Image (cartoon, rainbow over all chains, first blue to last red; front, side):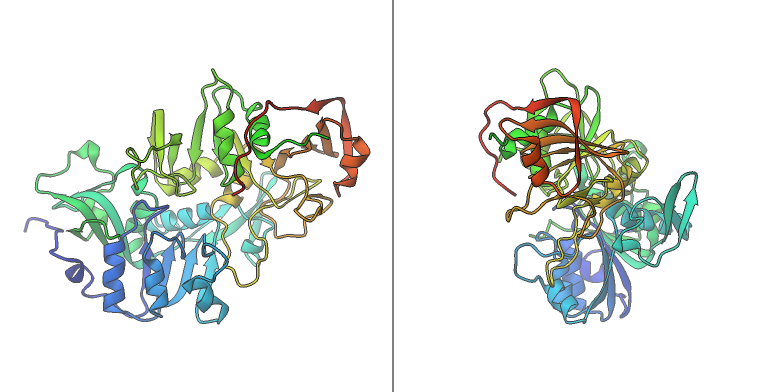
Length: 225
Length: 229
């Protein structure tokens, strides 16, 4: 049967999300936030989610809606500070002890996801040695430098935003839209991509930025604002 | 006494960037270093979200929400730019491919320890971003900051009191009052603000200072102050 990753809607794409899932969410600084999928996840309302997302509080991502809806048990991220003096939805729940936080240096966060998709269970990095973020983690000396052992991250679901997709799920990204999306797709059991445009003709191989083998479902959605 | 204003601090740091280098600028005052790189130098600015070759900020007509820098600012690309994803961008940073990173700081210790990510504000969540990666792995870490806190406290200290970003990483410090280098014996003052005595500078600094044999006057052209972040 010819492969066809195209589905009609966000609803269909997320029909089988379960309680307790670990969900990766792409995006950085306004580029690559899968806000249509996040909204659909809020609607489906699976409970006790663990989110793997670079920022828990970015003003342009709808991640905070999942947090406000009480669906999130734990966040793994590199940024969890809300803008301004007011406490963000994340900070309120965190302060009340209702949400767990694992804060990682952004490069460790990125590499942990890459490793998760590449069959590497853990890796040593020089980043964070001697800081509060690596307390209790194993340290080893290689050469004349200390390195800390960090664990890979995998997920049940990755939701990402890309620019174009074809029937094979091959994706392209605009400018800085790729950020965490491609690595997240490799580290999750199920990857769903929302895209600006679906192409009926296969994407030329030299234009493919994420091979469709990592992508399970794609659907077309104008960017949610 | 003639302290530098914030634009002049950025200008001063920019004068030390060398031709052909790959530079990462931290959020806040460090990003304005890009505005003062001497003409004729060909420098690439890297942004942690994967942009290699950040150009000037985009005009409203050219702004594109998919083309942003580490501070979520809508930017343009310079000639010869490339874009990679986040794991690759941080492989570049961690792998020691960044020649210089210019970062803001709350405190720098005499041994080069840097504290610039956690002010311990009650109940506010942590925000580390790429600070630890850059501080731990760039070939040269420069700090640009006011010499003292608003209440007059020292930021250049014997030992950091705030949570560390990385140990023994800072090589140079540019403040409104001085340009300093950190080496094995501590903090060496290379330039000092006009009309400020060595004793006065030491009084504003917790870490012990030594002065270079050829210690110069810190000067910069007149520049309008950039707004504090």
